[in-house]
Length: 450
Ligand SMILES: [Mn+2]
Figure 1: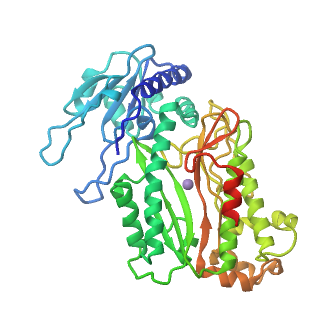
Figure 2: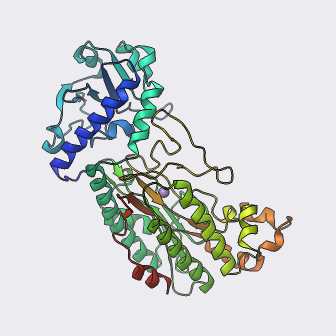
Figure 3: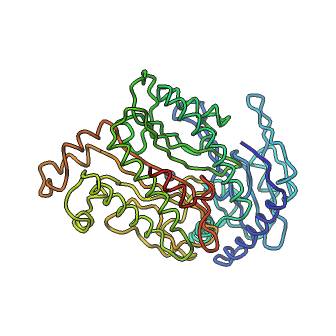
């Protein structure tokens, strides 16, 4: 959805983007950078189009999600938006120019992509986008098609959000929270996964294509499937647990929120685990401040999960033993979160430098999507989880460390699937802003715990 938010913020965003591109272009010998939104695709052997998603670096410039749109950056000049609007009586191709963004560009309207070559300046242009073939037709040199030094610089900087971007992410959280409320109510009333999913979309005022990713709406044991994609229609009168991971998209920026809810009569042990996970998530969020490594949050999550498992007698032994053997990872096999922006798993998560240096995730947690040093105005998710995944736990039943697991309790909890709690967090000058919950005080944590 398109929501107008402060023209001045957007104007400043474009200035900051120009400054960022002015630095990035120094990595290559070029006078200009052409950013392409992408091409329309069709299913194989079919004339039906695949739902389009514009390239992240294009979305960074414009709140437009359409194929064959182009932004031309030239240092010191107003950016040019080449808006391709084909003659087409099958589809609505019109793009309504809204002043708040249109005023920042020199807009050149074209009827087809093949008109672009004649409209571009005769300077040395680099191309960023999915179609090297198209770049060749524009006579762009091979070395300037997605030059890796340029991509590294652009990816790295995307982690730090402008005030405009933070406003979009705040709004995307606000919209998604309406959906989460409606979804929870539908679950409490015994709704099926399908009904909960539809209640979510309706409350957000969204179509499925407006979601930043495929929503996860999982009842009971399906909550243990990390990216569960179905929406069962079966009656769910006796369901006990809902795990819903769903966001909303505003001007191309997406939120990514997970909530786990229980119905009356749920196993009290599961409820204790859920309360513990909520507190763990809040305490990790509360520790966010510039200068830390994102890996620290992951370590806190694994540690917290292990402590909970010991406290509730689901695991046995010492914290040191569980850590040494990587037992928490069997219950939380994903990372504690990821960068968030115009892509739900935003780029540059493992990048340590603008030049492209990489910090790999620790060997014990290869699925961790970010190892960045936390900096002001970075936005990421914090999403610890704890699941009973038979595929991961069953091999331990006959293993060397089988005595570290309380199999009776694990069997008791497995039909309830699992838990994930996820908020979107912005780093401030000396701490954090929870974009999902707003300010959290110690009082909130205690309330949630009781
Ligand atoms: Mn996420």
